[in-house]
Length: 592
Image (cartoon, rainbow, N blue to C red; front, side):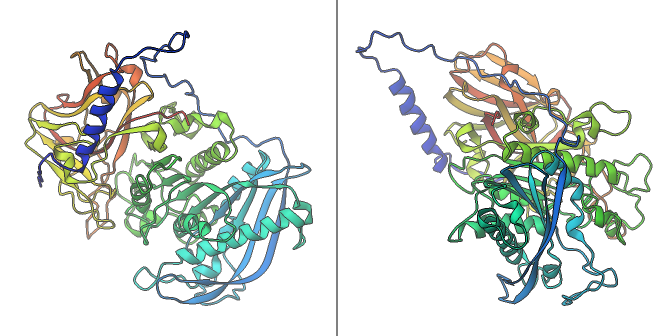
C-alpha cells in the first residue's frame, strides 16, 4: 500500500514557525547591559544515570497488615446500564512502628474465577473464594518494607458480573468506581480514623498516589484516571501501571506517568492490548507533562504475575492458544523456548512495578535510571548464566511534552511528504513504502506484517537495494535533548528479515557535516519476531510484530553542529533487503 499527497498539509505550519524563529534569531541591536551574554550550549547533554537499582531486597521496615471490610457499594456498567453491588474489601500493608506519612500504592487484580468450586457467576456468597487480591503480596510486602502503604483491592464481585465485550464495558467503570471508593475511605481514615483503623491516622500521604491494575484491572485503573478527575474531590493519582491490561473501551491515559506492560507470550490478552492504550495515550493531550512507557517482556505470559493465578487450574495461560505447548518461543514444551518461569516472571514484575512507583511517586532517585531507556535491567532478571538480557525487555519511552521535539509522529498521510517541523520527507531507493494503521484486535491493516499489535499510524518501507529515508530538520537546535528516538517494527511478513535487521542513522548539519551510527549498537530489539504463525487454526503461534524504541544518545553523533541540524536519515544498507515499520521519530530529553 502506498499513499501520497501534496506537501501542503497541516504539518507545513511548523515550517513557518521555524523560519520566523531563525530570522528573528539573526536580528541585532544594542544592549543596555554591561553583562556579557551567557555562553550558549552547543552540545547535547550526556545521560549520566545508567545503573538501575535492584528493587528485590527487603527494606529496613517491618510490615504491618490490616484486612478490612468497609461494607458494600453499587457500581455501574457504562455501556449497558446494569448496576450491582460489590464488597469494599481488601488489605493494606504499611511499615510498622513508623510515623509516616507513606506514599500510597493501590493494586487491582483482573478477571478470574471467583470460587474454587466453580466460577461463582452472580454468586456474592461464595463459601470458598479465590483470593486473587492476594496474588501481588510479594510486591506489596516489598514496597511496605521500603516505606510505602499498599492497598490491594478485592474485585471478585465485579468478576461475577462484568460481562463480555459484546454486551457491556467489561467492568471498566465498575472497577474505577471501586478504586476511587477505596481511596475515599482511606482518605477519611487518614484524616480522622474510623473503621477500626485509627492506627493509620496521619500515616498515609494522599498527595502521592500510584495505582496498578492487572488484566481487566489494568483497564480499570486506566478508566480510574478519567473517573477520578470527574469527582468533586479527586485524588492526586500521578502514576499508573497497567499490567497486561485489556483495552476493550479504547482508553487514553493522560496527565499522569503511565506505563503499559504487555507480555509477548500472553495467552489471555494475546493481542497485547496494552500496546493499544500506550499508542492512543502518546498524543492524547497537548502539553502532557508526564512520561509514557511501553514495556514488552519477551518471555512473559498473563498469569504468572499473580501468585494465586500461578497455582490455579490453568497457570500457563499460553496453553489457551497453544494446547500442545510447542510454539518454539512461547511453548513451555519446546526445547530452547524463550519463556520465563513463574519465579523469573515474578522477579521482573517486582522490579518493574516497585522501581516504577519508588521513582515516580516516591522520588527515590536510584530507581530513575532504568526509565531513561538507556539503562540495562539488573543482572538478577536474566536467565541463569546470562549477565545481560535487554533483548528480553523492550522498553519504549515517550518523554513529557516539554522534553521532546517530535520530528514525525506519522499520524497522517502527510508524513509521506512532510514532517512535523514542516521539513521535506524523502524516500529514495525503496521498492515500496506507505503509511498504515493496524486494526486493534485482528492486528490487520499493515499488510507487510499481519498481525502488528500496535495501533499507532506508522510508515512502512520495503527495500531490495540500498535505500534512504530522509527527514529534513530546517536548522533545528537539538542541544536541549539527549537522544534521537524512533520506534521500529521488524515486519515478520518478510522472510528477508529472518536474521534480524540493521540500518545506519545519520545526522547532518546545515554545513553538510554528517555523522553516522549503526542502529544495532544501541538497540536489542531489531530481531525477527519469534514463534509459529499467529493465525494458525490448528495451533496458535506467538509471532507478531510490535513497534519498539531505538534510542541513540546524541553524544554518539560526532562532528556535527547540534545547534543547526539539517536532516536525519535512516540508511538501509546493512542488509541486502527487508521491511520495517516506523513511528515516533523524535529528539527527547530522558532524564525525568
